[in-house]
Length: 518
Image 1 (cartoon, rainbow, N blue to C red):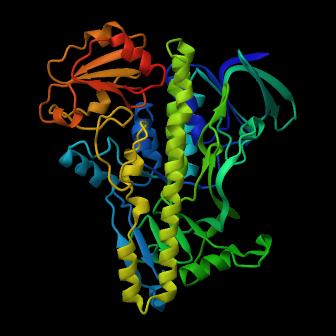
Image 2 (cartoon, helix red, strand yellow):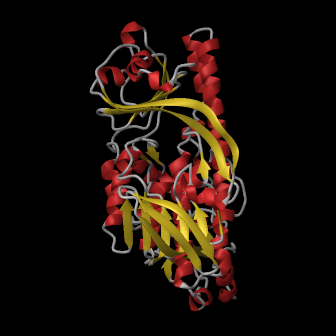
Image 3 (cartoon, helix red, strand yellow):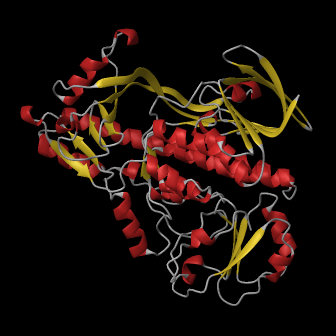
């Protein structure tokens, strides 16, 4: 029987990120994915700044940037009546957001802890998955197998025995692992076998996705480059600003999905006929669901297996990336032998709060979309419609508190505003130091003790049972942002503990490695 420390069921972005995280911390894993290759479906179209920070720590930032939309292109969201200007199509209101290049300049200019280490990235899941796959198949600590389905498992006190099936031949294989991670999507087999239910609302709305290629930029960029062109009937997503696009719209009522003509739907939405090649077209349902638990015993859930959101806000995959990194370092610490029992248990207590918060935010953003759609029908004229859209705003792409301000101490901040803090459980604020280096880039792979001023760090250093690096921050201009002379940072760049002095390092480490915040 094959034996492996961690078995990952599911090879989407979350499963592959978990595999990369485990390998980063020196842990072997086996990843299995029932599909023969990476996805053909675009699914997500933005990797937010927080995910990009985490990917940077995993050594993937350059490869991912190379797969994304050109860094000079904006992230604008434009509400329109139609793309066909020749028949009266009009841009009503444009929410403007900086390009990656512009955002980098803004980050350096502000440098007050309120900014991310990395700007967000426009990229389709079709593009991001091959990058992640290449990263793990070239890693000697990862065995990744596509075309292999996870079927079943049994667990006991010492491990998990899983049943796998090769899709092409039907051959059955048994694998023994210390831990099992279910990253196997919304219809998760792992979740089902655990008997874990879902809370929230399923089938919130019926949608229809058309993913296509077209060089008709005279129409598809009628009002200039924009990330999203939106109407009351759907959203056109520019996947690369060149020739690949996705329309998310509503299917015709009372029409058999098999009888839907995606070409007619594209023409109707755009306002006139244009040349294109349809790659994928299918109906689907949106959901607002959260798993009742994030696992049981030696088995854990992450990504869509644990939470499913309406795409408004882009929280689906991005929440899953946070799951993968949190679970990954805690599994690694446990397998390396320096974690206490409570550390793995803290995965659920920390990440489920984030999952719930993001589900609620996705629902609020959808409510705003519905209000805007109603305005299309009730506004007295186009000027009134434009004013109404501007007034309702675009919180789904401006919720910096959701993206960067989530905390593991249960404190709820403003979903729109990220307030930098080193309160234990919060994300470490990011700054550039006077020598031009980024503080995030000086953090160690495991734990890092930041020292500001003259506090004695020796009790924490001498008692450290886990890998620890110390960074002296000799930059008075940024020290006040960090609110203490000593700040202990976890591998996921969340704060574990802070203080101006430390008398009992062993007690602090006991809390941190048992999943408690200092």
